[in-house]
Length: 182
Image 1: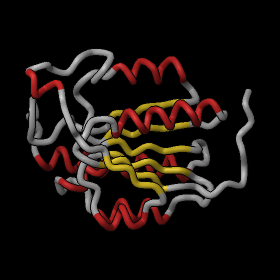
Image 2 (image 1 turned 90 degrees about the vertical axis):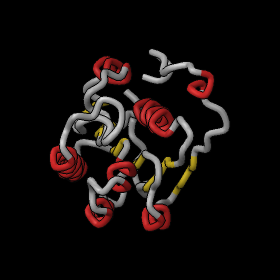
Image 3 (image 1 turned 30 degrees about the vertical axis):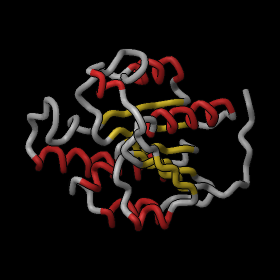
Image 4 (image 1 turned 120 degrees about the vertical axis):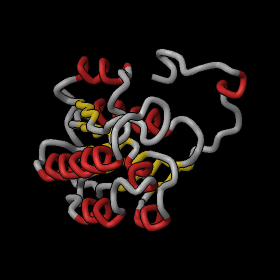
């Protein structure tokens, strides 16, 4: 068992932008944290109806790594058949769940996957996410992913990376592929 390094300042990390790789970067950080003996929780805000392979990976890494899909799926695109109220309720429930787990003392790293999209589409108020950040223990790390992170969140973060799309297989008619995209 690898021992946790104590006494470090917890960071707020944002992966945003229109390019692919935001969730993947967060998962890479999760793997690094797991290698240090940390407990990691990923709460998914917009992914909830598709089956992603990372869910199977998390089962293999349990109990140290958990992924909890709480969203109703993509909002107003693809196969969305939920009402705005249902999406909003799911997003608010996910944020409360994340806050409760963060404050439990059980985890070292919390990933709020696609939370920026939930803010940008109006499903979550920015102030609610900022309140969660205010409640963050001093040595706790939080990663927020998704397109369109608001300026206030970028200002608050310790690390911000913007993924920029240069080229995408979809432009050639290549659809999302198992093992690469989901």
